[in-house]
Amino acid sequence: MEFNKIYNGLISGTEKLALVGLGYVGMPIAVEFAKHINVIGFDINEKRVNEYKNGIDSTNEVGEAIKKTKVDFTSDPTRLKEAKFIVVAVPTPVNDDNSPDLRPVEGASRTVGQNLSEGTIVVFESTVYPGVTEDVCIPIIEKESGLKCGIDWKIGYSPERINPGDRVHTLTSIRKVVSGMDEESAQEIKKVYDIVIKAGTFPVSSIKTAEAVKVVENSQRDINIAFMNEIAIICDKLKIDTDEVIAGMNTKWNALGFKPGLVGGHCIGVDPYYLTNAAEKLGYHSQIILNGRQVNDSMGAYVADAAIKEMIEAGMAPKKSTVVIMGLTFKENCPDTRNSKVVDIINSLKEYDIDPIVTDSWADAEVAKKEYGVELTAWENVPKADCVIVAVGHKAYRSMSMMQIKDLFKSELSDEEKVLVDVKSLYRMDELKASGMRFWRL
Image 1 (cartoon, rainbow, N blue to C red):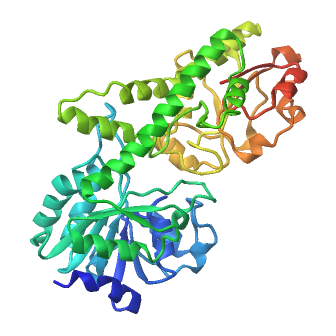
Image 2 (image 1 turned 120 degrees about the vertical axis):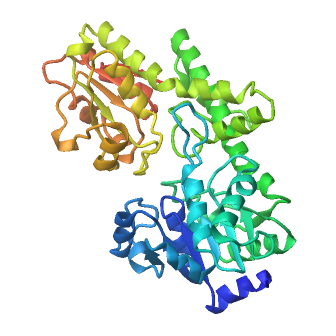
Image 3 (image 1 turned 135 degrees about the vertical axis):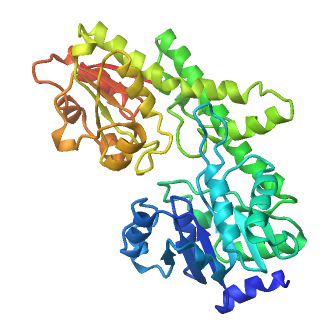
């Protein structure tokens, strides 16, 4: 098999690249590659595929570019047989017990195996713990295809680094870690990704190394944010402002610039569990990583408890109060609600028989209902509140004046009875104090 001619075939237009999984990661990759080569975009979600065909980008990752793209979108898995280079970018969530849920990756492997042509290179981008690509994916693909890995087809791994909602650190501007099962596949995979990655590629020596890079980089961020969340809790108990402490700390050249907050999403809130799961299998119990996860997973409940305490001190009966939560997505200015920790605030309030009103114009109401049982209320239908929790830093919330914030509350409340919980420290301390409102921020 001449695997070293795949790149030339893609460039000349005689071969095709296929993308399996067209979500927040896969779809932008497909669109970017389609600017240079022939691309088949496959997803089992027919609704999603039809939206893309009609120029609708519900992820908001490429926007208007979806209308002009040359990606051949399909929900027919047999179309994968046409491709000589297949990229798999399906989600890798965790189960309720925080163990890795490999079902999407296993399902994608079966689909690829059933539609694999000889002489193809398959590259996984899905975040997994070291060993999954070789120990889980290869056997499935071999079984389904009847083709031998290393002889009839080859495999590699290149961790996705797309940051949903980020218009600065985009696919082409982030250096791409690449790996292959041998020198030939590694070189060809590098050449293919170099077609679109302007920042360049970073080859590593093995697939396991590349898998480790992804889970380690996100575990590092998770631990740093966990530290800042602990600092926020300590500052809260000391009755000093966390944001001011951080601002002072950041005047030193070697400060890392992390802030406290709710840590959800498809990466930072999940990847540490993949890494520690791999360690557990080797007999090592994490001393730091899991503790960081425990801190970050507890922050939704901490925010809810703070809101209830503020309501009680304002003389309210929390059960009878109207609580409005602004924001549901896991990060600002992005429709992605995967692993949103705002849900933890909602669920913690419900334990006190408080049923909050939740609004977020970025989030998909259907997804919110299906995934979390959360009924989203349109902004224009949000009732006046006793307590407002600004949980996500969307631009629309960040730009609100104190007068606009005050207008969210019931008119009969005095300023000191209005409870504002500013989770992301969006508003200036001097303005908050001047407003006369009762406020709390993480």
